[in-house]
Length: 223
View 1 (cartoon, one colour):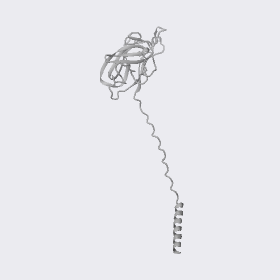
View 2 (cartoon, one colour; view 1 turned 30 degrees about the vertical axis):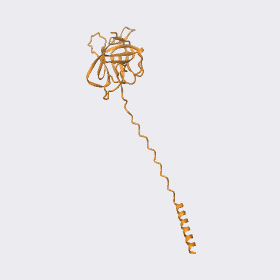
View 3 (tube, helix red, strand yellow; view 1 turned 90 degrees about the horizontal axis):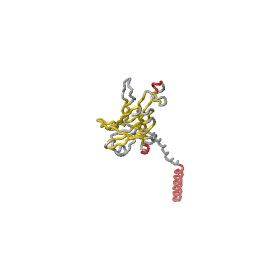
View 4 (tube, one colour; view 1 turned 135 degrees about the vertical axis):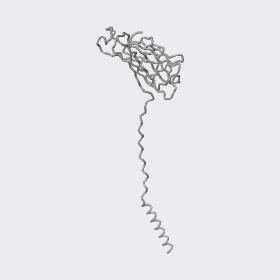
């Protein structure tokens, strides 16, 4: 009898323990962490810039009238503009560097889009007559001298050079600079003339990068 009561008591204790366990709340699964927002994109400066240089001629030549607008009290002035992509040295020695300014290969003479010459007057560069219009400028660097290439093809990517579109190839003067120029730079430098000079506007076209400077002469009108 005593044994039966003991067994019954043990059974009741086990049942109570099971009921107690079933009555406990099940712990909730840990909540998922909210997704972290993506870091904002920080804008970066391009490796090259864009620049332009212009010279203003205080009147335009009208071929139909046979004279200059300034003398005829008509609108002016006229512009000669070079617009170009401007690469930077960033510690490199670029002249003769493969993939940048290699020897004996046509160079875009700038960066990205082609370098553009726009002239609203007939002009002469070096000894070559350039009718008014829009052109692309390239150069051919060699160890024995540089040439400026004037192309009739325009608005193309700078490396898309087509030799069949050459208008002229012009010899350039070369000079080594004592201090390097960090960014490719073009200049159109007019030569001052004192009245009553009858000489047409003229000056020097030059560009430099690193320690290399190239130049030639320009003037309005035929040579």
